[in-house]
Image 1 (cartoon, rainbow, N blue to C red):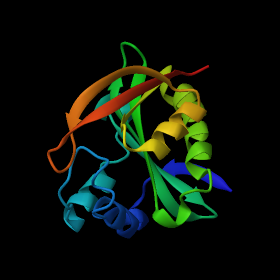
Image 2: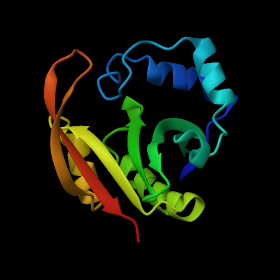
Image 3: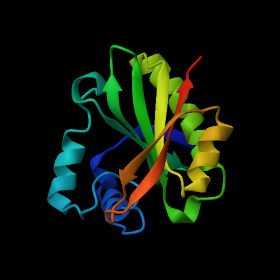
Length: 164
């Protein structure tokens, strides 16, 4: 069974491994390793509400084991929107778990935070993520250029879903 839950101190090792995995650094906006101390502070402050911090992280848990994260960021109260990011441990990819987790998240954020639209920003070469968001009903709203973790300028797709 898949559930979303708040991050807690027991997740430190998993968080450290996911955040510092070089293969995962290609996806985020920050590309340097995090220390255990920084991540401990992050977890200690993770309960700050989305409408205060502008971001929130959920742990994706399967059978009581942390398998990934869903991140809300760029929260905008005026248009009731946020951006979303998803990452799964490599051992759990290819099982449609990200799709299930995002579906759970959509219900959670609408009911808990009043979010009416979610956006995803994905490099065009990340075809798996683009396909995931398309299958969930995210519609393309624009293309732009951004630098990746190596400083290479690449095309990015921004998609959006209106939550019902």
